[in-house]
Every structure is written in C-alpha cells, then in structure tokens.
Image 1 (tube, rainbow, N blue to C red):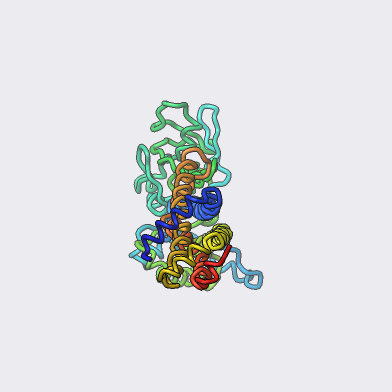
Image 2 (cartoon, rainbow, N blue to C red; image 1 turned 135 degrees about the vertical axis):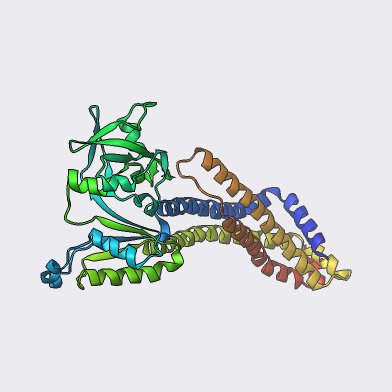
Length: 407
C-alpha cells in the first residue's frame, strides 16, 4: 500500500460519505479560517499602531521633558533652571552625532483666526530642525528658516486639517495671514496630510492639527514661558539609542546640578509594551483556532473509527490475501491526513477570502499574515495525523479470522 493509494482510498471514502465527510471538513476549515482571520485582524490593528509610532519619530527619536522634582528634593529645585535652550545647545555640542536637536515650546491653548473662522492648534515655537526631529513633511510652501529665527519673523507653518478648516476649498493658503492671540502670522507652508485609520479614528490626527512658528517669535511677541516644553532629538540609528540616551542624561545632570527635574524618554518602552500586547493577542487568537482544530480532530477520529466499523470485512479480506498490518495502518493514517489537508486548504482559502472582503468593506482593515496561513495549514495537517493514529493502529491490529467472521 503506497502513499498515493492511501490518498485515493481516502478521497473515495470522503466521496462515499459526503455529509459526514463535509461536516468533518467544515470543522477543520473553520478552525484554520478563524486562525487566519483573527491573526489578520491583530496584524492590521498593530501594523497601524506601529506605523503611527514610526510617523511620530520611531526608535530614532529621544525626548527631554520637564519633570516634577521628588518631594524630598524640592528644596533643591531652585538651583536648577529647568529644561532650557542651554540644555539643547550643550547636547548639540557634546553629542555631534545627533542629527537634529529641536528645542520646542508648546502654546496651550492656541487658537488661530482667519476672517471670522477659528481653529484650535497644537502650536509650537521651534527651530527649523523641528521638522526633521519629528518627521514632518511639507505639502506646499517652505518650513521655518534660520533667518526667521534670527529676525523674529511672524511666519507660520500649519497642518493640513487646520488649513482645510480655516480656508475654503480651492482657496490659496500660502501668503495668507492668520492671527494668534492678536499677532498676525504669514502662512509660508502647509504640512502633508497624515492618515492611519483604525475604524474612523485617525491615529495621526494630532500631526494634522500641528502648527509651528519660530521659537524666538513666540518668546518675544506672543508669550515667554519659563522653560521649554520639550527637546526632541533625532539619532542616526536605533543601535545608538542606549549609548546616546545615557550621554544625554549625564549632560543634563551636570547642567541641572544633580537635580532630576527632567526626563529622557524614548519609544523603546512603548515598542516593548506594543510587542508584549501583540503577543497576548496572538496567543488568544491562536487559542481560539486551536480549540476549533481540536474539535475538528475529534471529528476526524470519530469518522475514522466509524469507517473501521463499516470496513471490518474489507480489512480482514486484505489481510487474508497477504496485506501486512503496516499497510492497513498507512492506509487509514493517509485517509485521516487527506481530511486534514483538504480542510486546511479550504480553511486557508476561506480565511484569505474573508480578509480580502473585509479590506474592501470593513472599518477595520485586517492584513494577511503569511505566518498565520502557514501555521493554520500546518496545524490542520498535524490534527489529521494525530486524529488518525489511533484508528489506524486499531485497524492494523484486527485479526483477519475474526474480521472475516464479522457480520
């Protein structure tokens, strides 16, 4: 009995008991399809989150933020001036490998006005490096320039959402003047539109509501806060993250005279939390598919045991004319494997079809995961093998004399 003959016999048995075989295949198919679909949803969800993190700077971004001093050290807080432009200058001086150092002040609240229309904005006073440090690209116009900073120029770069709400469709935006707390600012640039949707929610909506003016202009003509809101750093490679973070921390400790009124933050912790959460979701989704496949394995075993009961005389006859027990074992094992293979193929096809359909009509856009397709198909084959071992062993151990006498 060779392998191909076992497959042929398996297909004949499936065709000979269509309803029973269909129900068994249906269980395997649902198990594999659920595995592919659930992992597709998980990949789609977390791919959007990862794209959002990368659009905000990824692992190459480091932020220096003000931090409240611990209660027991508050009496020392006066010896430190907090997070200031001097910190940014010293970081740039002692860490020349850093690509950009961007001191920033966020104005909150910030409302822009244009001809009776108003719009809230995430407005920052910043240097030209802000666009590189925070991964902003321009759709039209220009960014901030060193000359703007030197001359306290009243110029502004606005996000796409701000432009669409302050100005009419088709209306030129560049060269128009908007007001910020009564101070006129000339629009010199419009940022690119950013979009990463989870349902109706745009993960990158905050970038579309951003606006930037020269840091010196904000400090001299709008409001001079006591310290910076943040310093954003962009490094060449994530491989340098730990080293540069440690050096920046040491520089700041010296500048702040040992007072820990700052925090050096990276996206590394966010990425670790993201990966941990994703593993949890994948395990949960895999458990759903595994339970379905376990049920389908029980179905295959029941089908094979029923097949043995119906084919006792056939098995006895084959043994009587010289078939070995291993031939019978291989035949029944291959028949069970055929059920698993067919269920896996149909399940993968159903899962891929479901993902393609939901990408076109659903709010949440699942992504096809090649690994989940491979794992789902492999599990269907494994289930077929595991479910067929006992029935195949039982069939191979039948006594030919008793089998021939069976009525």
